[in-house]
Length: 459
Image (cartoon, rainbow, N blue to C red):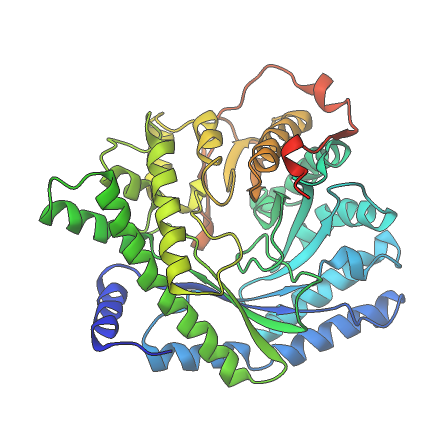
């Protein structure tokens, strides 16, 4: 890739003053060649293959990071959905494969390993059920393993049996990790229309249509976009929405170029069989001042994120980011939009604590961003059917709008509305939000499948 002198200078300024980083370089590894239905043999194979493919990943990322001066915040691995690999073994044996993944991640020094996943949008196999039932033990007894479950697609509708089971499972995960304030739930995402090349955890997995080994990159850059908007408004105080959207688009172009450069260089140095996959354009906040999606929306003229107009402002930003990224790269994939994880965004935490940002408003915002209700803390006493109902609402938004949507709910054991739970690091501080107290159990207990919408018929 060719970079002009001006692009190099601008990129260095973004790194030095505007919190630009590459949020993740994620290696996807196929486990479809797993040879055995014997649990111990399978676990050994998984450990050996992940360690072999990822042996020099972190070292290579550090070398490329140093060469170009662009920081890479996280190095991660994703694998084939584990439910596909483990279909032939007993439910009590899934933990052996999960611990093999955890040991491999620790050995390689990567932050997380994702792909302890299953796809049940139209129905579940016995192995899928065993996988879901294993989640409380797996997510409480491993440190770096992340999981996801896809329960809906636009083509298939919403599997309400799975949604009901997931509500119960999330409660069980929280209780199993209660000694760490239910942190196991932070490693579990529930999806509609899940992408197969997402580099971000906890929802990443290596899709069955992917090559054996790929490098996918997730960019970041809320701080860069925030600085660009502030600069635009200072230099041109009369800027309107269209001109500010153009400013965001140009900025996203630059961020995407930097991300693709890092990804292609890491791929080149790793060599065959590793291939370059995609750049995920998503603006991903972190719990440091200025690196906030909420602050971007406020820079557009909202007194605080969560007030009326928030959804419109977010839609404008997400659309501009996508347009800029598509102009910069022909390898765009993953989620590509904006994350609104409450605990990882200081502006959103402040809005929740001041009562401006509610769960209902967050739900509205998810109709226009790339991920749904992310890192949302709710009272520990929230019933399983309420968790399932919140998930069902989000799945409906994804299915009807032909978009990916995900949910990470954190029913923190013992916590009540107004409490705050500090998970530290990138997971940040979780304010506990109120949920609607009117029961939804009758609807959730109906089960079955909500049919695919008429708009899904496009052939």
